[in-house]
Length: 193
Image (cartoon, rainbow, N blue to C red; front, side):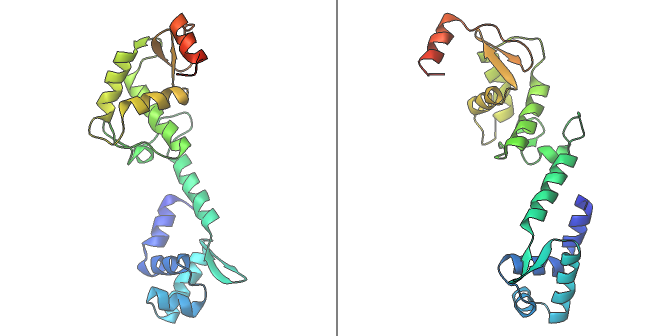
C-alpha cells in the first residue's frame, strides 16, 4: 500500500470513525456503529473496506486494529522517503528541520540519524578540521529558535559517528581522527568525557 492509498483510504470520514471506534475498544458491529455514530450499514461497509486493506482484522474477540500492519506501513513510508544512496526528501525531515533550523530532534534513532546527517552535509566539509568553537557556532545557527541545545546536537553527532573528535578538533565521519593528546587521554581515563 502506498502512502497515497493509505491517505485515500482514511480520508473517508466514515472509515476514520470506524477505525477510531475499533482502536478505542469497540469490536462488534453494534458497538462499532454506536461508538462511531454511524448507521449499522455504513459502519459495516467502512469496516469491510478497512478489513480488505488489512488495517483491521477479525479475531476471536471481534475486530481489532492491526497495529503491526500500521507500523510496517509507517516504516515503508519512512524508507521510501529516502532514495537509496540519496538525500532524504523534505517529508523525511519535517517536522524536525525547517529551512536551516532544527526545531526538534527525533526520538526514533533512525530518523535522528537522517536529520543529523542532513545537518552535517550542509554544515561541514570532508577533510577539514574544525575547532570546537567553530562546530558550536555552526550548530548554534541550526538550533536558534528551536527546542534543541547545540551542545546536545554536538554530542549526538559524536555518539552517532557523524563527526569524530580527537586532538582538539572535529572532522566529518570516515576520516581518521588524530590521536588524542595527553589531556584528552586523562579525561577519558577518569571517565569525564
